[in-house]
Length: 274
Image 1 (cartoon, one colour):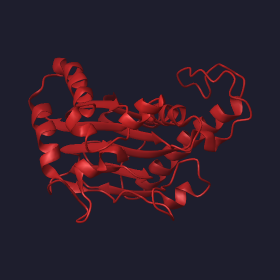
Image 2: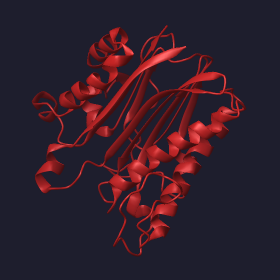
Image 3: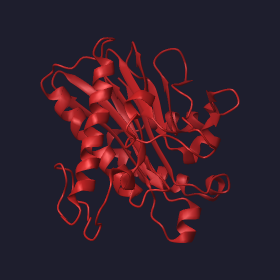
Image 4: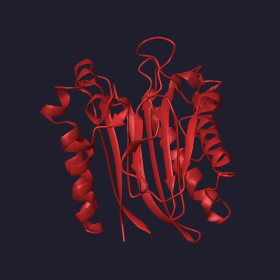
């Protein structure tokens, strides 16, 4: 089994106006790990209230990708009912460990936890909440698909029964609040599900696209939003994936999208190909 994948991020117009950076990051990759071709999709959105939310999101995505590679290297992990919850929790713990190391590094401008270097010079007396971010993850093999989430944004997928929303975007106690991986109770609020088949189609995105991609009242995917992406990706060759990334980034930063959301946007897509 294999998949075509593409992912991109775009800064929101509100962030561009106030001179801040895009706080989103995402990853979509297919790798041969042990005896399996494994699809991994991760999306993180730095909290607007966090001083270094962008660094938190980047660290989350990078550490999750590294965890997934290491977890499957021995061929031991299997996406079963018994093992999937532990795999989801272990991935979140790896993300938290990397963020906590980044926070504790303080004046050390080197990389924390073996991740790619991030310039943290001058960021003194940092705490994990300074890097707060939401996190969405999907791991799919030929046998099953594990999805898990902390915070808003969403994952939609088709494993043979049509396109469905995995879980409603999480909200906090008050409006415009959500949950983050840096919370002490993040494993308690995490939602996860194991689907008994490999993903045929999958999309993960940050909250900047929720109003475009979801029928919020019905709690369902807005299929006309996704089908053009899935259709193009299904017909693409491996050589065209880089070109599609640029086109996806241009779409996310286009006027029709920016007219409906001023937030950062990230979107990762995967389509199964034989």
